Amino acid sequence: MNMHKRIRLTPLDRQEVWRLYQTRCWKVTQLAEHFRVSRPTIYNVLKRARLQEFVPRDSTNQRFKTIQYGLKRLAKVEQVIQGRLKREARRYNKSYPGELVHFDDPRVAVGVGRVDGVGARAEA
Image (cartoon, rainbow, N blue to C red; front, side, top):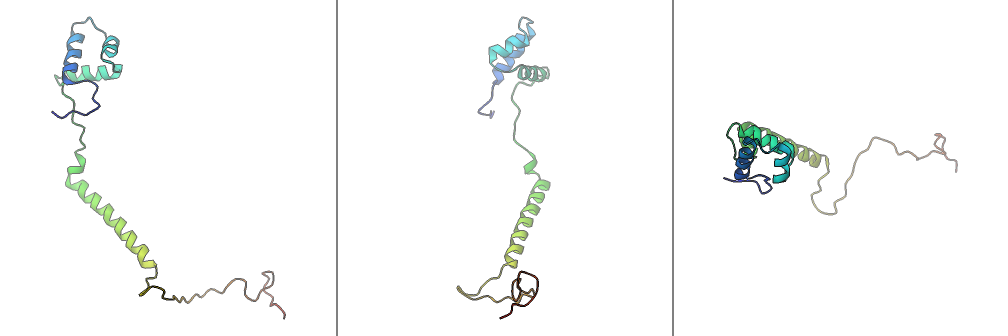
């Protein structure tokens, strides 16, 4: 049996809690103080003890082992890769280091031939 390293009550402790509770001499608060756990933990142990289930449950997430989860994860990874490739495609790739890049920009530069941004030509 593989138990978590921070387990508060071992299976033997759980059986002891159940045995002491069945004698009707110990109350839940006394059990909680004796075993140094909270009252809700004792109530959870008692609830599972009524089903004769004293071993701790396996906390492994089984969802990641399914094919459906794997396909969803693969789709997310592919979207990330496609986004990265799109960003790289927008960037200009030079064929050799130091190559000059020329862009034809249809926009006119903002301060050329203007005085105070009004549009009048500067007189020389």
